[in-house]
Image (cartoon, rainbow, N blue to C red):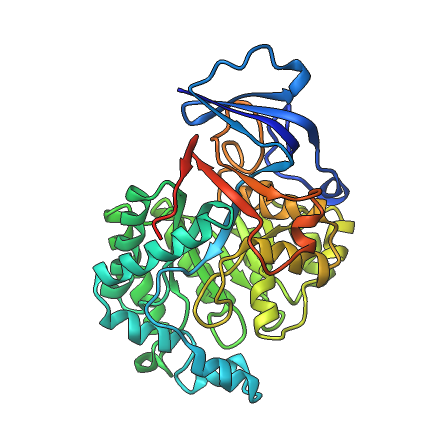
Length: 415
């Protein structure tokens, strides 16, 4: 079946040759076509170009996009959107001045979410997550990585991953799953953290692999969480079972997390509020995508990752939502665009590259997602009537997406 989108005011982020990622100064370049068409066959992009080059308009479905822009769908490479309940009371604690670490020490934070998740059924978790997926789809997201990590025991971690697998099977979204058993240390293992690490290595990882529940393995390598040595052991075991490394690192301090990520050829290294020359040099000589999470830095009022310094050094940058109930309760990638421009002083062009092609790379899918290119998966959205691409991050706080297409088919919200 063929679908034709015609009279597009501007078709954004087109590629004649598929790229894996965009680095350094090249991030400022975003190729577009004005007065364009986009032709889809089944679930793939067949052709695109200026309307004047369109030879015929025969298609099963024709959509007129006059005065509207078309973008490739966002790729959100870091979320924790399978969870139970909200954490607005901790939000008030933060307003009153308690730090992330202080809340965690009191049994809040990740431990609070773990307690709730352990009590929830798989069906409850699945239904809640489906609603969140519907929400982010309608704001332009077409691919998402979902992490476990709120289980903190074998049974509950497997429960989370089974829910993610179900979402993969039933959602039009492209979904990648990430085993994050080392997200926090349960209260019963305080003072004997090494035993919990042993549990992850000797019990959890083999069971996750046995049922093929995770594409990636992740560790929160940071001050007050997991050490470099513990991270090394966990990622080594994950690699033995076929799970590529990703990592939370340097959110709270210089932790050595960036260097251990590079050692394990991690696909991405995420958060990165604390980055210096050593970390930048390590990343420059690697295949690891530096991924910044503006929503978490905003919500926790943290220092900002030195994005401009990193790009000036030649690094690529990806940006993701970190959608979770404690430190970034939003999966709106349009807001991430605005944060990228306002807080990190990125141009709109740089911000779009960070939230599409580079975040697709951080999920291992940039050959098939993250731009408008022949043969790529037809995941894109049509905006409401807006003047230009710069308007997307500028007019923050409202949804500028009008229609969404995933795998070549229009998505209709379940709400």
